[in-house]
Length: 85
Image (cartoon, rainbow, N blue to C red; front, side, top):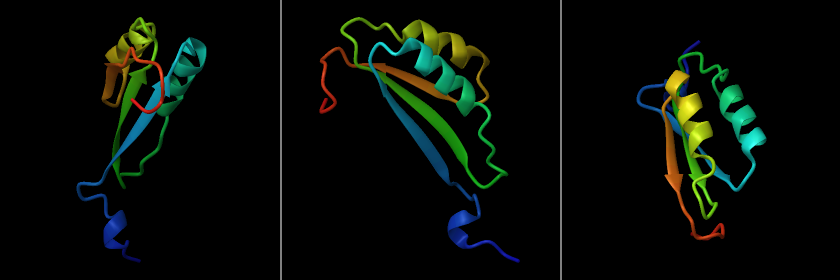
């Protein structure tokens, strides 16, 4: 049985975007669990974390996990609080 073209995995990339504000334990658990995502070769994925704290409080967690991660994890700091930024 052939797969539809949209599921062929040819160049398909999914980006998981995470907005966070002082939820260190939950962020660590999420980033750890995302490493377990099975793709069955259908797609590639990466993670982007946006830290919405005035100080970059999530940076150490993201850096620690991304050093050992099997997927690319990007970190961005947005000190202005609000989801609209």
